[in-house]
Length: 181
Figure 1 (cartoon, helix red, strand yellow):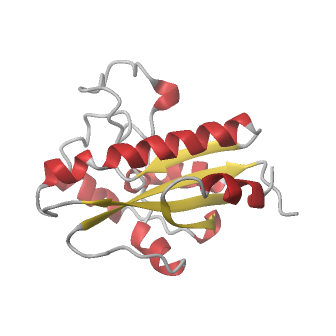
Figure 2 (cartoon, rainbow, N blue to C red; figure 1 turned 90 degrees about the vertical axis):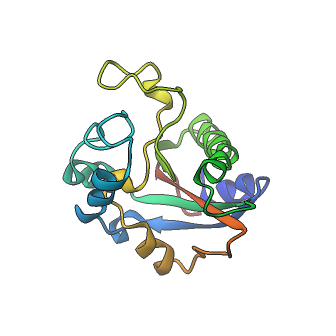
């Protein structure tokens, strides 16, 4: 598979912006986990969040084993940006798009590791710490791996804010077996 084929495929979706990132250029920091630990109710309660995803160092090593990553965003309209429940409801379309792209890539021989904008929500209540019921389908949060998403967004000249009536959702699909031709 080549990058042009990926671009052609993803253009059928309402993707706002995308880029192919060099994984070695992504910044990882333990400080990102501070927000997870202090502000996220899923910390320590989900297989897609810390500490279940491993240390930042192990996540960094895993991500760097993939030479490139597809970073993309979608936009969802919201009436009230401060209504967190309604805002989170808008991520479902983004997650569906992410899963469809990953399926396409895997069906075409690309080895993928996927991260997205929020922790996994396949189950109403995560089985953690008991065994995950959907191991193959879990998509961890980008920040759960210690990735400083804002730096990547700035580096690749992507938008992060489009006003109070829009929310941008991001996914990062790490790629192996993709070639430049």
